[in-house]
Length: 451
Image (tube, rainbow, N blue to C red):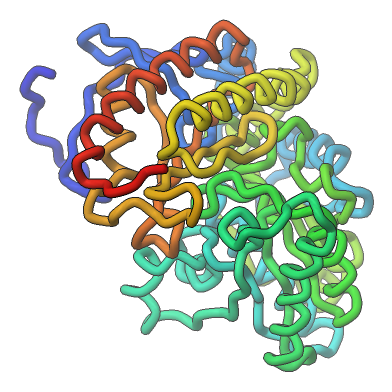
């Protein structure tokens, strides 16, 4: 990489990356002409691939009409059409849509709507939102209070009100059978125990990713878990909120991951793949029975400047059209099965891979020091960072987090766009194989047993 000019930008660190030149389909090129496979769709965002000409044309058409119309001054056709289309895709009864610019805003909107609903129906004592650990629900203080990932949360705890947590259903770490409903009930019943411990009259909602995102690495719930969760929420008058920021948009083989489990939420949030990176866009989708009392009580005391932006909504409409006409959810299911099988073959080849999991093209694998005990790799190896860097050097972009509370454990999300072909799966796996060979050679001297 040539020497880059001083940057006035700063994000998480001082690390620099090559300058992006262009992106097409599942590939990206830097200004020096080097090609990268986008094996994580950015941050699980670019569901339909890069530079789709039909989406770009739809955005051009809207730009020629208007790029902004404030929601208190005008209704816009793109926002109305996208809201109607979104309600059609959502579970029955979830017909009210509130647009935002990203996942953190969507989660904030959901918990604030839930709270206003409780106040509106005379249950103002309900204020606690239970979530899981580990989990990630956003970086704003409200969403961060619901996040179970210590390195991101701990510095800001004095500034917010942390919310109660229950363990995520990581059966693979606990030695339980994920295909047994008894396992699903075991983890779901932890929610009931926590509701009772907090006082049912104080609990407002339970927030859950139907298929896990970055912090649990594409965790699929055990059999019976989601239905039992729904039953428990109903029993105690607790609202069920599905966080589909990462899993929505067709990535798991259904437009919403919750559709796999037959347990509809009261409120649902989506972003990332909803507009697939073409514009900042997300949505909160809520049941009529929740929204109407809030509106009757004086209105929803919440809003963002760019809510319902016509250009973003035009992009979102075009993305949904592309997903439907090209049957990309179906492709995600089929190609995802192929990719998962290839990852399982890698697990058979490399004892350092302790688990492969996910649905559709929301997939992950986890590295361990000992597959028998699922002991994590020594934290000082920083495997979550090193493997990503090796893959990047080899021209493959993947995404990582630390599995065990953020301080140890290493999992890697392999989530290419939903347009990925079987041939491109083989290309991804070839680079992963090279990368794992390099990584295993590096860490072997530091491990006493990787069996």
